[in-house]
Length: 250
Image 1 (tube, rainbow, N blue to C red):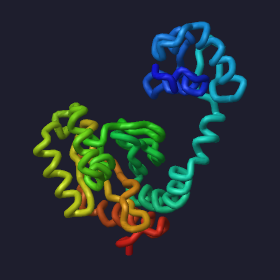
Image 2: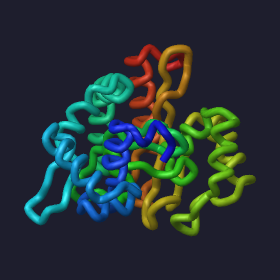
Image 3: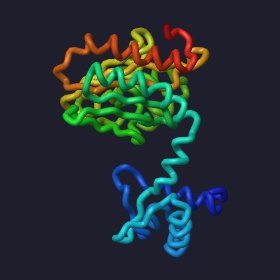
Image 4: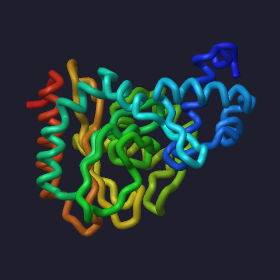
């Protein structure tokens, strides 16, 4: 840890950051191993975080993220305002597909899923609300990457392009060609890039001055024809863009 991370706030965030989607319940020993903090320090921090609602202690002695963090996170203007504007259009898109509809933003070099609507019998997907996926492997992530900077692309390439299925883009040449096509066409169609048996489509959401701030995606079974879905998808993206004051959203 550097000097900043050794402060009380730094250590508290290290504890909170040790939780993820694959391990949402952790013991104090788990947290100590993940953070490198001494067990007595973890014990004190967990007690304080529980007292403030940032963590909850379950009957088995393990901890989960507390509801208070969700309440605070919902106040973040970048997420709250976007989600508030987007929800009516996401619901319209859901009614048109009755499958999976997602609102995606970029957080660092990952795609962060702000919202996901899904039917009970919708095709299973990897993404979930609040979850993250690599930019190169998801439809929404590819849209965000296509409209990001050259430095962002360089960082993604430097980190590598891990494969999730046989169709995941793992070649720099293919990735660059795909990003060029997204910028030209205004949308992307991904066939089994993340999940076998799925077809994912995504389009950009623009804010003021045309900056792409998010992507809307829908995921359906692989045997679906994407052509009838594109008008509803792009209409949802344009509607959200208009709500955000985006240009070129008419």
